Image (cartoon, rainbow, N blue to C red; front, side):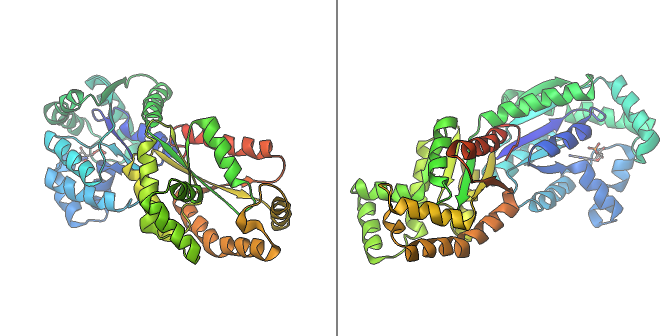
Length: 390
Ligand code: AMP
């Protein structure tokens, strides 16, 4: 998860910059101001309670803000982090944010403080007032909002400076310059966190060899579950013995055995820039578990690639492999090959579809030379390392 707060006085450009950032990063957007205005339009109980305070330029009580926050967070159940705009605005709200983050097993990564002097805020908000239709964009109300900012909100900055999370940005620069600075700050945060690439493809699509090559080229830890289980057997551990027994009976290895192994690999690979998963997830349940694991281990982006190769070519490739030294035990015979392709179609394709709805799937043309497919995959991986490219 990556959590960012945009901080600054009214008129500093938090809303404008948030809009840019939301386009670039896949974070849940939390604007307490926008949420309050929505409640107001809907004339909900919360909206009615906040109405007069907003109109006078005062700060809405923390009690109401907590409820607004709960609603907004609940609307993003699978968000891989949040962008907070206009929150926290009081010392109490800073503690609320701390609590909220802890509940999500996460923490705030950076607070970007847009610095703008009062005269500039006033000028901008008066200008905005000509078209915004906001009841609080009038001179008297703006002056009160600035007063509230200096009395209650500005002191919150020290709280974050002490934690080493505050980064100042000169908000008087052009919108584009501020945007660029923010982008750099966010990019630096992303670079600190591991990314995850999930590689799908039919048997014979080349996903195994592409996964290994991509891992090597981008310093990623390749977590290939089938291979991982084989290694456990080869290491002769107690778990390895149990896996061997299951194999011999032709049973599937249950999730309770596979998942701790995956987690161990993730933990041991902390120094790497991220992970490539191959052969996992294979079921809907596993996709939920993987998302949980990635969140827990602070992954900033998840990218899903599906390597596509026409069925006839898959058959040709697998047939060729069955007659080569690289022949796998499951490659021998047309019947076995067809069964594996069917299995993939029946079980994994729906998972890719479902998983894709959450993260989006990049479809890779898997035909042609290995290097060409590798170049196509590499383009996607490079994008993943850009701001929020997951
Ligand atoms: P904004 O859109 O962020 O400028 O917020 C507009 C108004 O909503 C503010 O002047 C406050 O009255 C209220 N508001 C927004 N966010 C908060 C917050 N975190 N705490 C208290 N009041 C808020």
